[in-house]
Each structure stands twice: as structure tokens, then as C-alpha cells.
Image (tube, rainbow, N blue to C red; front, side, top):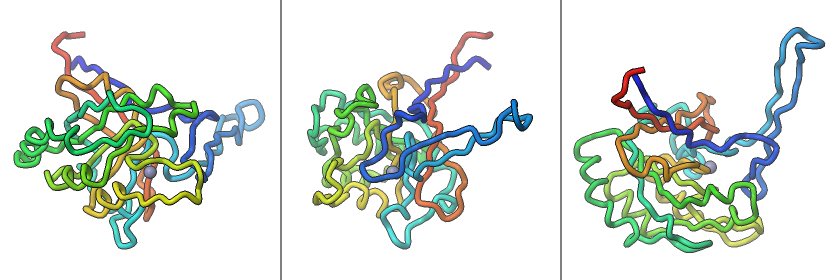
Amino acid sequence: MAAEFIDLSQTLDLNTQAYPGDPIFSCCPNLTIEHDGANIASISMSSHTGTHVDAPYHFVPGGKRLDDVPLSRFVGRAVVVDVSNKAAKEPIVWSDLQPYEERLRRCVSEDVSFIMLVRTDWSRYWGTDEYFEHPYLDREAAERVIATGVRTIGIGTLSPDATHLDPHAEADFAVHQVILGAGGIIAENLSNLGAIQDGDWIVNMVPLKIGGCDGSPVRAFAWRRTSGTR
Ligand SMILES: [Zn+2]
């Protein structure tokens, strides 16, 4: 079977941007072939490092934890909503998403497993200060999306809420509360969503099976069959 794959993940390395205040990523040689006969690294990071998913338990005290969430929440057809015209710190409001409402409702009613992906193209700023100044969803937009029945939402920014560099700034995490409060899943720091805007793509962003945890890095990718034989 011939297939085409698109990587939707950021590379984890020393330049990986953490959410302000979160632990930073490191990957250091622990054993080496030279001294020990094999290379084995020691990895340190937060549960929300790089391209990752949030489980409801991230913000909801009694919410589902990572290993309680069915795999079907992390795999599905891509529905890409294009809001790549948004500027720094600009809210994404319901009228931006409404053109996709019918398609989202149809996917829900047909019980197709699918994932709504918010394309901002902000991944082009990964590794720079601009990355923190991303557009974000407003509360009403999140509520209206949840009302369609959508339960898995991915975005190519640090967060679907506005990011504040000052850890003491007033932040309400309204979008996290709305989506995770409805038992939904959020994927953050996705990349390359413009490459799957059109066409019939299956998205996979399955987390590590970390018992009782609130989130996990993922290797997110999209794939589709191609007609040619190889
Ligand atoms: Zn997160």
C-alpha cells in the first residue's frame, strides 16, 4: 500500500520552548557504546513539553487521566479550520469557525472519529519570542465548538488560551476549562497543519501510557493512502 505521511510534530531538543514556568526539556547520554556497550539517554521534561496532549485531569480535579481516555480520542480524520489570517494575540472567535460548523456537526452525527485542527501557521515562530504571542480562542468559540459535539481539538500554538509571560498575570484558561471540562482533549504545539488543509487525512497523536497523568508528549502525524503503487 502506498501512503503519504506528514509530520505534525516539533522536534524535542535544547531549543524546545516550554510554557512559561514549566520544566525545560533535556536529553543527556547516560550510558554510551564507548563505555557501556550501548547508548542510553536520560530524558527530563514536563508532561506538556513540545507537541503534546492535555487530558481532562490537567484542569479538572475529577477529570479523566491519560490512561482513562480511549485511544479513539487521539486518532481520527482531520478537519482543519483555517484561521491562518490571525495576527499576534488576536482572538479566534466563533464567526471564524462557523463556516465549518456544518461539517463538524456532520462528522459528529455520522459518528466518524475525527479531530478538529485549528490552523494558525504560528509554528513558523517556534523557537522565537513571537511564538508566545500567538492568536487564541475566546471562550464563546470554545463553547460553540463543544456544542457541535467535537471532543478532540488540536492547535499549532503553545495553548488555545492566550499565553502570559508573567506567571503572576491574570489568566483564566477559559478554553482549557471549557474543552477539558466537557471531557475533551487538547493537542498543543502542532506543526505543519497547512500541509493537511485539503484532502482526506487520518491524524494520529497517541500519548504515552503514563498512569494517572495529566498530559504527554506525542509524535503527531497525518497520513493518507496514495493511488500509486510502489
Ligand atoms: Zn498542555
